[in-house]
Image (cartoon, rainbow, N blue to C red; front, top):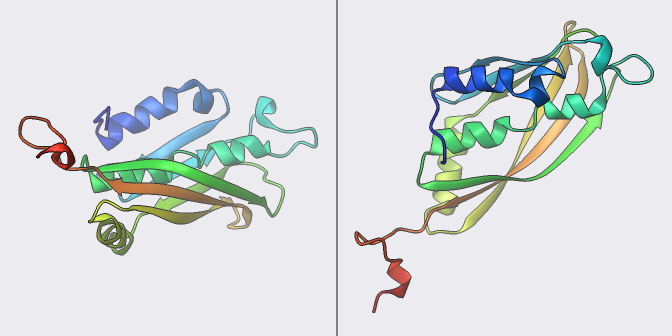
Length: 164
């Protein structure tokens, strides 16, 4: 991990990040153990589409980094974690404030650790619903995250595969 922010600091940084700030995306919470997050998208005149509902790009953007960030921080520095693929399905028009919640189960982390223990990569799909104030699902987002355990280094920094 290049940066090691606390969850609270990362939440504040993301809330000031221009793509979130100017599009009405608000990170309401990131748990201190990196196992959950809640994000909201508030309706503003400048973030609605032609027909007056939430712009689909913002519905996707509000969910974009969270599975990678939660997984990366929960697994720690011994793992490489990247976004690999994503899909979004628009189910209903999004109006008002909508939100998405992310909950990273310990069982999922255990499966990722087990699958990557020998250095193999693992692709894992996460699913998140974007929900309006009435509890109606307006969009479903699927994110595929790439996880691989980093290769061990020798004390002198040499890659052990190159040692004689």
